[in-house]
Image 1: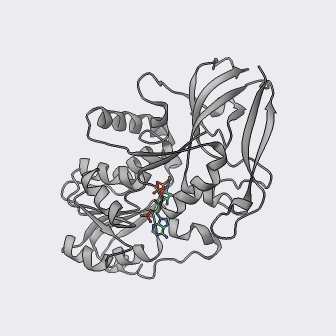
Image 2: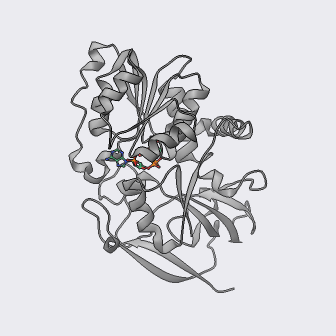
Image 3: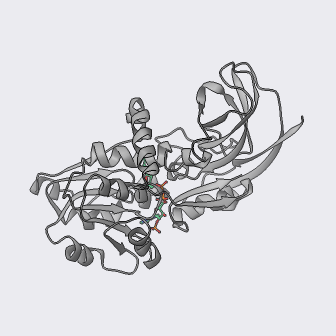
Length: 334
Ligand SMILES: NC(=O)c1ccc[n+]([C@@H]2O[C@H](COP(=O)([O-])OP(=O)(O)OC[C@H]3O[C@@H](n4cnc5c(N)ncnc54)[C@H](OP(=O)(O)O)[C@@H]3O)[C@@H](O)[C@H]2O)c1
């Protein structure tokens, strides 16, 4: 079979918001896999915030070289294999990249059971960058317990929507989501079971927080950073935990990150602020997957997916993630 790969490569490093001219769509024939490699027909890509950061020359995760295919996690099916551990037809998840056919070492991939769950669930509900990130952030870093007042930012997004639901499962009450726009503020309450939603674009976040959490905040699960982080820091309780999951408000100017101006409240209130990368918990991924799978089966966890279509729309999907044009987990079916 002659197959053609369609891939999205980086041609120029964006200075702020990525533009279509920063990327190019290229086509190439798919060859036979080298020793240990497999060819995967990509089904779906996970559109993640870290992708924006690796377009910069200096990045925590490995930067994408100019001319290279953009890194992205994805799910798909093996169509050709030179790795004895994988055979054609196997469903896999891993770093497949922004392309329609990925030729990668089989060792980079994990085989998953797509009889039990739809393949896309391994990027969202059970995805490392979504469900697992929320799980470890809420439980291990935030240590949310019964009666804790919990606030989540980017609450209508992938990680935030799961984090708020796990906080409730762990007994957090009330669980308050902050998101952009009235539709998202009601979405987290009506569809995800949060106790309240604050629209940071249209409402006075500080005033609404004082109303909803008059005694202060025990756990802040922050995905956003910047101004929202300062506003919530002002209202933390003694012994509060501020979880730095991410800071998407800063990702378009990582060489000039604005830190929290209000960090001294941590000293005043004997509180802590702790960051984490989900990869730090790699040896416990199976435990998280089990717990998340059980909550899904019991109907206690709901992961809404927003699916875009077509590999050539990868740059648009990334722009959508950054501007918040989606609710829940943003996916691109190629
Ligand atoms: N620590 C880890 O290991 C780890 C792993 C995965 C992800 N993360 C982090 O988790 C966060 C969420 O990622 P995700 O993939 O789930 O994306 P997401 O939340 O689905 O999408 C990003 C959201 O951020 C919000 N946003 C963008 N710019 C903003 C700004 N200037 N101020 C306030 N909100 C802004 C937008 O929602 P609105 O419409 O509400 O503005 C947008 O929907 C990111 O910070 C990411 O880096 C961390």
